[in-house]
Amino acid sequence: MTTPLPDATAVAQELKRRGETIGVAESSSGGLISAGLLAVAGASAYFLGATVIYTLRARRDLLGIGQAELERQEPLTDAYVSLCADTIRTRLGATWGLAELGATGPAPTPYGHPPGICVLAVSGPVALTRRLETGHGERERNMHVFTRAAYELLGEALAAAA
Image (tube, rainbow, N blue to C red; front, side):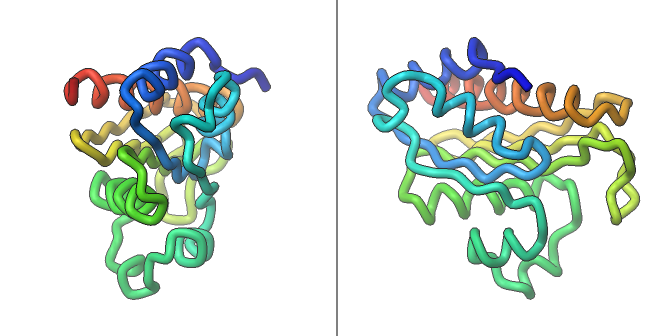
C-alpha cells in the first residue's frame, strides 16, 4: 500500500504552522490516516498519538468508552464517530481529534451495512462530520479513499477555524 502523502502533507504543515496538535482514532483505515500524518517531517510537533479502534473492545479499552455508552451508539453514525473524535482529543489533550469508522469490505458489517461506507469526524475548535459511500467492496481501495477523505475533512475544519 502507498500512503496518500500529498493529502497528509498540507494538513500536517498547517497544524505545524499554527502550533496545534492532533490525536487520531481510526477503524477501517487501519492506521493509514496516522501513517500519512507521521510520514511528514516534524510530526512530533503536532501528532500526539493514535489508536486503531477496529473492535468494540478496542473502543472500550483504548478510548475508555464505557460498555453502557457503546451499547447506546448506533453503528456508522455521526454521533458515534463524533464521540470517538471527542474522546481521543480529550484523552490526549490535543487541539484536534480525528476519527474514522467504516466498512471497507469485501463483506458487509455484522450490523448489516454494505461495504464501502465511512463516517468521519473532526473535533476541536470546529466540529465536522462526513459520511461517504464508495459503492464497492474493494478493501484496499476503500481504505485509501477513506484516508484521503479524512485529510480533506480535517483541512476543511482547519480552514473554517482560521
